[in-house]
Length: 145
Figure 1 (tube, rainbow, N blue to C red):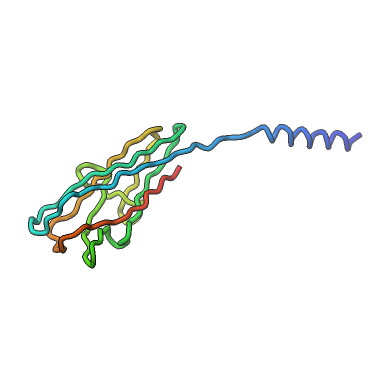
Figure 2: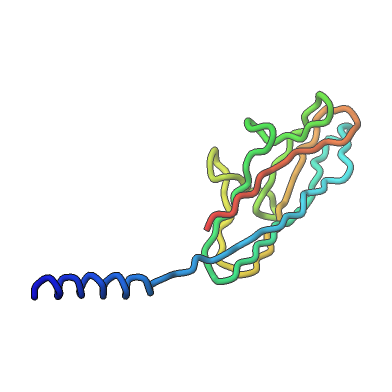
């Protein structure tokens, strides 16, 4: 008699345990790169640009957007031939808060918007002596939730 009770309790637990499930939120992102336009090494002035990251989730969830350092880990730099053009990315239009992965004094973006549009503000400091050409860098955007 004791055996049948134990087996029934086990079967009931397994049956009811199988009915519990939770669905994790699903999120995706798209990005539009920062276009700085023409940079003049002779002007001494900074050159600014703006890009965009769009996040879309199927439910409200808190997520973090991190920007990796790019192809030049010690400082952000776009390469063109053998020259490197230094730049920085920011979370704010005033270009005070560097956007990164949360290390080395950089910040990340945290939000819970189901559909969020986040501007990426860029700046190339003036006074860099580089040759004419096209300068590029690739930044990995990580969405954690």
